[in-house]
Length: 193
Image (tube, rainbow, N blue to C red; front, side, top):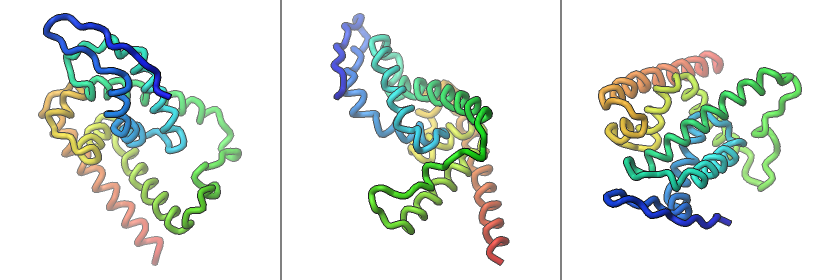
C-alpha cells in the first residue's frame, strides 16, 4: 500500500510538489532501472529502490520545483546507490568468500526454462560487468544516454554538469564500453579454440 501524503502549498510562482503516489507511479520504472544500471546487484535492487522511495516520501515536501521531478529523483538515486555500494564494499571485504552463495545460481522457483533463464542471466551479467569497467561518472552518463535514452541536455541537468562535459564523458564511455566488449569477445574466441 502506498502511503498517502498531502501536498503542501507552494509560494506564488512555484509549482506545487507532486503527490507521492503520482511520483511513485510515474517514476518507479526509471528509478528501478537506474538502480540496477548503476551497479546494485540484482537481488538488492528492490530493497534499494524501496529505500529511495522512503527518502522521497520524507523529502517530497521539500521539492521546490526548481528542477524536474526526474532530476530531483535522480539526485536521490545517485546518493542512495553510492551509499549502498560503499556499504556493500565494506561488507564484502569482511566476508569469507568461500562461504558466499550467488543467489542467481539457485534453482528458479517459478519453473522457467533453465536454458533461457541462464542465457538471459548471462547476458545481463555481461552488461553489468562491462558497465563496471567504467568509472562512476562515465557509467552514469552512459546509462542515462544509452539505456534511458535521455538527451544530453537532460543528462547535464540531472548530473548538474556542462553539456559539453556530458558529451565528452559519453564519447569516452562508449569507447571504453566497446573496447571492453571487444576484449570479452576476444577472450571467448580464444577459449573456444
